[in-house]
Structure formats: C-alpha cells, structure tokens
Image (cartoon, rainbow, N blue to C red; front, top):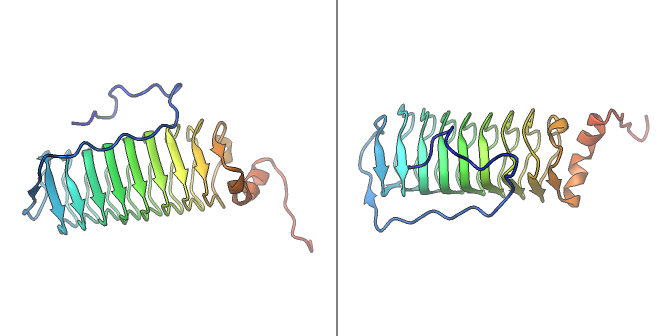
Length: 232
C-alpha cells in the first residue's frame, strides 16, 4: 500500500528529476463485476474493463496492482484514494475529485482528465502520457519522479505544488498557473508555455531553448518590460 501524505518522502532540498520506476505487475487479475465502489475498500489485482463507475462517492479506496482500461469514473469523489502499481488506459477521470490522494508506480495513458482535482496529494514514480488534463488542479501536491509527456495541460493549476521532481515533455501548458510552486530542477522540453502565470516561481527551472519563444512574453512581463506592437 502506498504511503499517505506525510510519510517519508525524498527531501525537497535534494529531490531532482529522475526516471520513474515501473509498476509491479500482478500475477493475475480478477474482473470487477460490481456497479459501485465502497468507501475504504481494498481492491488488489482487479481489472476494470469498460466499467461504468460515474459519479461514485467513495473515500479512502485502495487500488493495488489494478488495471483500468476504458473505465469511466467521471465526476466521482475519491478523496484519500491510493493507487499503487496500477495501469490506467483509455479511461475517463474527468472532473474526479481526489483530495489527499496518492499514486505510486502508476502509468496513465490516453486518459481524459479534464477538470480533475488532486489537491494536497502525492505522486511518486508516475508517468502521464497523451492525456487530456486541461483545467486540472494539483494545488499543494508533491511530485517525485513524475513525467508528463504529450499531455494537454491547458490552464492546469499547480499553485503551491512541489514540482521539483517533474519533467514536462511535449505538453501544452498554455495559461497554466504555477503560483508559489517549488520548481528548482523542474524540466520543460518541447512545451507550449504561452501565458503561464507567476514566473517568479520559476527560479531553478530548466527550460529547453526552443521553449523560450512561447515563454518570452511572460518573462518580459515579469521583468517589467512593456512589449509594443510594431505600429505602436
């Protein structure tokens, strides 16, 4: 079972981007045949294939070595949820609220995560690939060895998040918010950074030179530089 928030985590002062560890696969899985999630339930080596679990209200659920494919958990309330050694593909987590949740050794791919709220949580050894996570909120969440690759993170909110263990690669971060985020060592490559908020939090971030074009207006604004149109 994954450690809850507040358990031992790599010291923020020494954390740096590293390759996320892969999920430990189950020996076999059992197909989930229920119609709802029970609060505080522990689900181990369970497969959720095309499961309709929309609008669930189940706190403190544990998923261990589970497989979710084509599952729909849209609009569910899953506070304190724990996912460990899980694979989530082609599933919908749109508008899921999972405050205080944790993920450890988890892979999410081609998922719809628009509007997901994962506040005050922990992500450790997580890879999010080609997911639509626009308007998602990750306030006060700690990220350790996490990669976002090819994701739509338009207007995502990382306020007060600890992003020192994150790599953003080929992501759309247009208008994303990083207010008071910790970003020393956070890496950006091939990303659209147009309109990102509060560049005063970006001290120590590592930005690929090609990404500076989309970041330039924000940098100018943060430096107090007024940019005029050619005919002004």
